[in-house]
Length: 298
Length: 292
Image: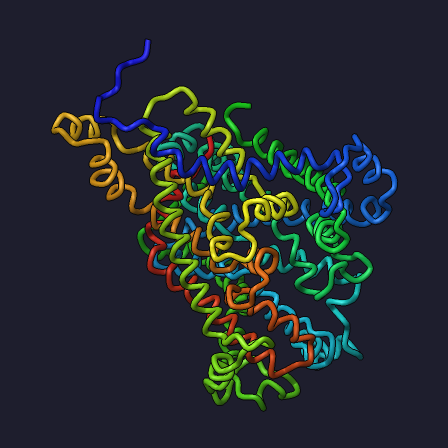
């Protein structure tokens, strides 16, 4: 039985229509198209031809760069930046919640501000700091201190590029998820703490594990999802820092760059679509883990 | 009996016991702020300080020369910088306003109306929080090509209007508005449209401010539409122009560094100001950001 709605009520679809139109066009259709295209050979000029699973088979068996560099790079980067940035966000939020409001606001603003600056603006600063000659700030500092005898090509050396990417991304990862966790910590009912002390919680660590985290699970999950997304969106950082795609010896090459390389540089659209699908699956799996940890239902 | 007195969350005044947190937070905050402070200094450095060796962190004789150079500079094809800035400002304004309206309308329907697909739509949207646009850049490009949006002004705007995180936050926020309030308004003879404009919108101001900030950051900093979908120089945005500056800063082009730093500052400052003004609204919204 449907309840008869008020006559002057607009249908919910009227309110939803604009959102659904844009959402479908720019999110759902591209994802569906990526899945369809991934089974074809498509060079952006001729009509796509169906080739079944060849793209995926090729990606796993013949693409040496992908298996040797891209996948390990992506996983290393994601496993350090994702959980690392996430744990750091929580620790910062938890510590900030315990200082008075005025100080907290100022500190939170400073910690959040790097995430506002786009990769582009930041690449400027970091390229100057890590500049490869002796006028680079880091080189100059280390030379003066006597740590180095000659300048290091930070952004062109495969040895350092990945580490710098991870560092820069972590620095800029205190974003929306961090704010959500901060407000989560602040909104926990104090009575829950009182009850915990009576039940024999007697140090901060127990308190975090048994009270703080369980009480803010929804915010923890939101933060985790944001961390996953932020991690995979940071793909452009390596190219921005080193100024080249592919990055020197593929040292900072992540899946997003590989995708760009095949799609917009080599025009192998079908193959690029297969990489897209694999990337979407990886993102989804990471989020699934977060859901398992903090979600209330599966 | 342990001496553990529990944690003082959200304390109202300073106490010596908070020093240990501050000892950890303050150095870290300073460290995190360094690159940003550095941009400020760098943007105001005269040419001889940009060239100085060893490089200096602080600026001795601040000057506006970098900004003057930036504003009088045109790119290789003769498009003045101000044109890029104008494009960015117009695009950003349009996108922010439309995103707010679209998200709030959809959030109202998902939160307060009953219909069959309600749950499914919200679930799909929550799943879409994980959507990484870069992952489907190829099909997106093909789609935009099909729609005939290549090289148009609209291509900067349309792809950014559906913001899953915006809908998510505003829906969570509307959830806490009591149904009785809407019911009472209905009994007083308010139409659906009046309820939306006169009750929902004023009450969800914090969420609206938050979406506005997030959408602002997204659009203002976005380079992909300019670099992928637009060939006409006059239609490109300031953030794209800035990325071309950095690509000419291959380490040694010091004058370019000054320009790039000035441009970075112009990119960063609006973000900062808007966030400072609206930060309490954002924190208020974030209290409802949990995913259950």
